[in-house]
Image (cartoon, rainbow, N blue to C red):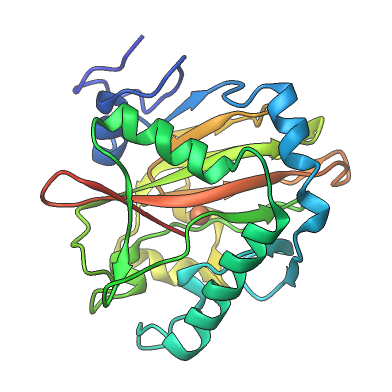
Length: 267
Ligand SMILES: [Fe+2]
């Protein structure tokens, strides 16, 4: 059942389709997460994953976890001062765009997802732009060993602003293309960053003590699931189990709610 505005339970809901209310409640932090189990059916997943081997991926170790990834994430292209390293980002974004087209994944999980989210919201989801130029959307990640505890917040990553659009609130979208038999869940805690948390900083994430005593929700990954949550809440991906077996591959992007009530996407 839909959670109400005053529901303090910080729960995750399984739904048959996302609604505007789900997105609003997640943006506001009232609902921990919403998931459409099996949004992509097995035949569609088989068709999409058949193209995976045509995507050149990079091994990616410095931040948070060992992962393999296709496509640039804006968070990894900022200077220590929080300014976009445009000379690195745009060539990588252009190359990823081109390689994505060449891989010819059918259907395109990013486009299908954006279309579905636009229908849920009531207006088309557009791509966030930087100086008029659309950002890359549709990063694909393989995370088998979990991630450190962290949060994502575009305002803290780019304190001087980044997009042409102002972002009021941020959501994470994940579509699960390949899931392990066990593990690989996403845990969310009902806690957002505050300055005093930084004594718990640990490499690129945070020590679990930062969320001690906070309400926690864990969402297990299922084949083809579509998941939305608010990344301002501390979260982490749990390792595949047992012993990191299996593969966990998602298409991931962020959605930003603008003051005009539009949704824009980026990765
Ligand atoms: Fe995250």
